[in-house]
Length: 453
Image (cartoon, rainbow, N blue to C red):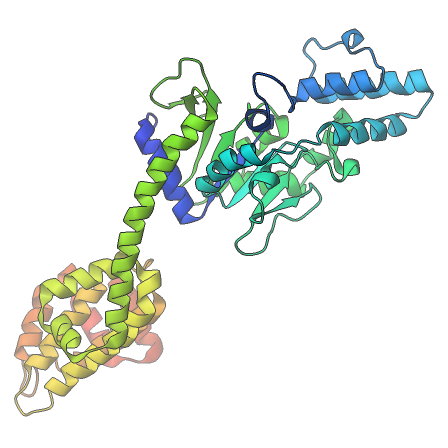
């Protein structure tokens, strides 16, 4: 579940992204290329790339963009050079020039999708099923598409949002607050301070999520640093959740299967971002149908457990195949089932004791023991819900008095115990032994010693 193979098929990758959405840890990293895909058409270019935006700003500030040295230079340094040129030409301080540049950036990114663009791309973005979005864009295109379902966050905000609302974290600032915009070289310096919130948060999000990258080339140094931290600085913890970084890129002749780049990122090629979204939506719908069917079955089982009917109790006690099916469902879907099952189990245990009340009715003890052993063998110690462990452990202690071959004991229970005791996982026996010692459950402690003898 934690990740994909080195060379997964396209189908496997789409299914993995959908699984991450269902798990609740799917995130999207969205760059300027997405805004351009939404807003631009063959007749006009509304959204601009970072380089185009700087060129437009230079033109607005009457700075000769062509005279600025760009060979081997990053965009933040180019932005700083624009500020230097503007401050020299206007006799302003560098700080005032930088503030003016940011104000112009805010004006130039006033991009809003129209109703047709919203209709087309809203379904794509909503259908992705992301729990969070990080963007390097200053614009509000994403929020326009996620109307009523998202909240914009600036770089100085905490990465949190109300339940059911997608946080859209603008890593480099948001146009509605020009002072927070990160554009020039010196703006980036603060991002690499020790324990800087944004850098730590971004690294942890990548570490703990499946991240789909849209319209972004992964060339930003703080993003690459966060990717490195997620794999090295925070790389030692055990992962029990879906985790990958998947980049969607446009290609005129896209390759059919995904591949990994030199950084280990899975790359998926598509002729157009809409094509990818259509592919994914078909996969997502199939999974949602399967999940609905499964959830309906789990709800039905949960309702039957809650009802605690006599026929259901008898079937669980006496029908081994039925009991195995219930326990298999419980072991795979403990969270929605365990509360109701613990109550049901207590009723089933009580019923076996009722069966044992008549003189010579020793079979009830054997039924009780078989049921408890099946439960203990359906889980490992690490995955067994605590309340279920306590219920089963105490029940084993209680029936332990009657497990034996002396007069007044259940010979059948003894045969069952002797046949199955060696099959109990060693770590489970140790946990039961510790539980018995703490609570002074003598009969349980005796069974544990016998199990490892």
